[in-house]
Length: 99
Image (cartoon, rainbow, N blue to C red; front, side, top):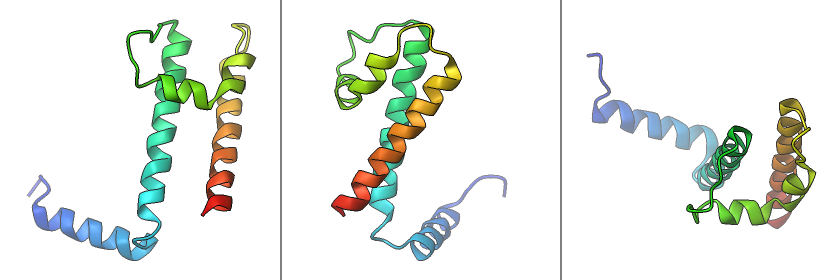
């Protein structure tokens, strides 16, 4: 009984649909995906790795030019997190205005 059965997953999906509504779930999934993409790009940047060989990171870099322009190496991790949070809030506001 320690593992999830298909019934548990079905009940979980039903509860999520009832709580959030079927209309908002795709938008929430997209927002989580974008946030994870940004987080992945920033953690690679903090480690000093280059992502020249990965083409999946290029759209995220193009979508956030202000983050790359403001990151000058001397910027602390807290400043980067605050900047990412601000950009995420801007994206959410744009989604609300568009939808």
